[in-house]
Each structure stands twice: as C-alpha cells, then as structure tokens.
Image (cartoon, rainbow, N blue to C red):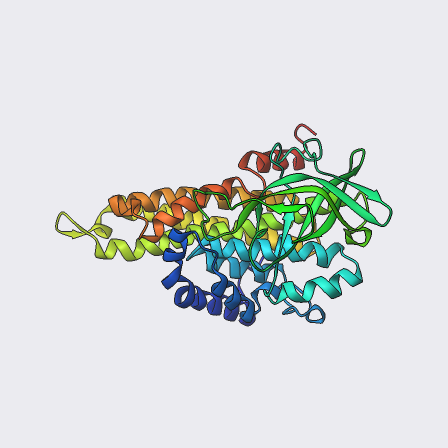
Length: 381
C-alpha cells in the first residue's frame, strides 16, 4: 500500500519552509517582483536554512536528505512566490546535481561546497535560441579538444541563475563529435563567455534568466562532467528528476491560489454578503482544491518511484503535465474569483497568473510530456 503521509522530519521541514515563506518572502517579494530584482537576501536566507543542500550527503556539506524533501520545500515556497522557488530548484537540480551525480571527485570537492550552502549558484546550459526540445538534432553549440583544453563556440537561451552576482559557473551541453554530446563546466568570467542582459519576461520576474554566448571559450579538459559522449543521457536523467521538482513547484502555485481565494472570499462582499456564500464561488474553489490535491498525489508517486530506484520517466512526465495544468487552471480561476482586483499586481494572484504559464513550457512543454507518456506506453515507438 502506498503511504503518502510525511514523517516527523519531513513535516518539520515543510512547516519551517512555510514559515520562512510567509514571514520572510511574502512581505518583500511583491516590491522585488515589480522592480525585477533578484532576491539576494532571500537566497542567502534559504542557504542558511540548508535548502540548497537538502538532497546532498553531509560529506559534501549537504543536509543528508533526499529529492523528495527538496520537492516539499519547493511546494511551500511556491505557495508564496515561484521566482524564489525556481531559483532554488534550478540551483539544486540543474546547477549542483549534475556535478554531484556525474562529476569527478575533484569536481565534487571543489565545486559542490559553495553550491550546497547557497553562497554561489550554478546553471545548466541546454536550450539554444534555435532549438529546445529537439536535442540532439537541434544542438549547434560545439566543443573541440585542443591539447589539454576544450574550445567552445555557440549560444544558449533561457538559462536560469546564469547571470547573478553569485553565479559561479554554467555546465554547458555541446557537440564534441558527430552525434556526440558532452557536458563541460564553464566558469563565469572566462574569456569569450558572455552573458546577455536579462530578459524582459511576463513572469518569474525575480528569477535570473539570460542568453549566453561562447566565442572560442577555452576551459581545461578536466572540466568535462562525466564521460565524453554521455551528456545526452545525463541531461535526460537530469530532466526526468527536474520534472518532479517542477511538478512540486506547480502544486505550490496551485495551492497558493486556493489559499488566497479562501482568504478573499470571506472578506469580499457582493449583493449584501460575502462572495464565499455563493455556490458558484464554492464550486470554483472546490475545483481548484481538487486540482492541487490530484497534482500533489502525482508528484508524490513519481518521487516515491524515483527514490525506490524504479523507472519513473512516465510518472515524472505525468506529474509535470498534471501539475503544470493545475497551476495554470487555478491561476486563471483565482483571478476570476478576485475579479478586477485579480488584475492588479498588488495582489498575489496576479503574480501567480503571470508565473503559471511558464510551468507548461519549462523542463519540457506539455506536448513533450504527452510524447514521453505515449512512448512509455509503446505508442508510436
């Protein structure tokens, strides 16, 4: 029988992150969001709490937890703000995790300690301006071995945590031979590596996102992460795990919409009574809660399979699909419940609405998730 109950440590973590989100994030995030400023103090606070080290062993400076505990933290953060949550998610699953899983002992020794404390961030450079999901066919970035150095040329797009003042490096996927993809660490500040100005985005306005370019960027051969030619397999595994994390973040946004609506419908009066008295509003909020609950069950189940060492590709895709659609639908309904106030940026639901759509795109679009699920079922294989 599947048990979705949380143990004492998980419950304590969930409560402490929820308190952090309400007391530290909520009072300041609206202003930071409108100014499109990266939340350095909040990130530092998450680092002190050990959130960036949650799924890493203590020998590397981590907290000795697992990926599911990270997901619990992401859900609680996203109930208040998704920009903060995606900064943590990308910093851990895309920045630090590839080094931990595939890096050499020396790379783990030198690179991980600064990442698991949140003092520095790392990014993962996969998507390119001319292609996203069509890897490896759409990849144009190349890396050739020249003596004891890799020489990298190309560009990457939509890369999270790549241009902050505390970004240490980007792990870049590149063609190192015909139909051969490898991953290579490129430290920020390396000659020829440039970070474009931040994007003007619809949402996630406190998240750091840039286009990157590489012009004869030279890094040591030892910066190769994992085996040469195994980069494609590595990032597929990275994305599978990341989809569970994005599902958790999506559940947080979906549940945050319910939270805000429950408060609002008790206060807002229409036709002489609180709007929560009207069945149309009650049913809408009930639908929202059902979506959040169902999506949570999906990511819990996917995480359970992953931690048990069982195949979880299909379950991760289902969780990401269900949760991202729940977030989008709940954001739309929450905005409707708030009426005109839902269109005002001073209210959290407006921020949720702006943030929700990217959840159906990042870490594989809705269409990609359906493609994965159908292939796992043997359809079109």
